[in-house]
Image (tube, rainbow, N blue to C red; front, side):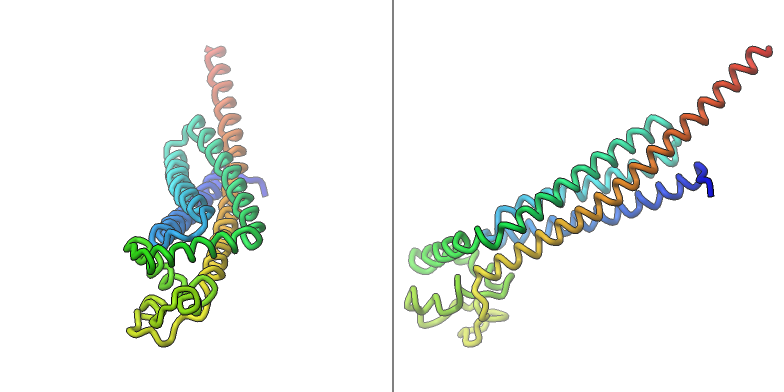
Length: 244
């Protein structure tokens, strides 16, 4: 079946609606990841980078999709061509973000364990030996967000700091006193959460890249068809003028 401009218009509308939905999902996930970083202050820098980039690219997809839908209404060749360029740029950008996420994912397990352990133990010292409120709040948030306790386990508090009572945040719903602490250490919890986030960022970016590339292709074909139709109309007008 030969595709007409009407078919390309329907395909373009569908692609833009999908991109708008993906953009909204990316933006919500990106903002939620950044919020986790702000609250715990111990999650990986890669989460911060991916979170902010994901939120930004989500907003970019929403704006580009809205622009694409407006070009369908206006039916202006130049605007349609610009939309194709924007979609192609989005395709390349999301492929880059996906690669960045998967590269981080491949090295996070081997390079981050010792780094996170040092960060968490230092936060313990600042919070419970130096009595710094900021670090105490940071650890409380980390314990509750990831349901973990201590760097390696909750035993860190008694072994390293001779604390008879665990922080309330080591238990669900801030149990006081904390008698049933989270069993997972925060180092492993942070690494696993980082891996989850990088997986989601990579997969969402790949899906967005595929949709954007498909959209760019069909918009380009649509632009060429519109240009040929306009050329034919101009030729007919010139022919009529010659007859006169």
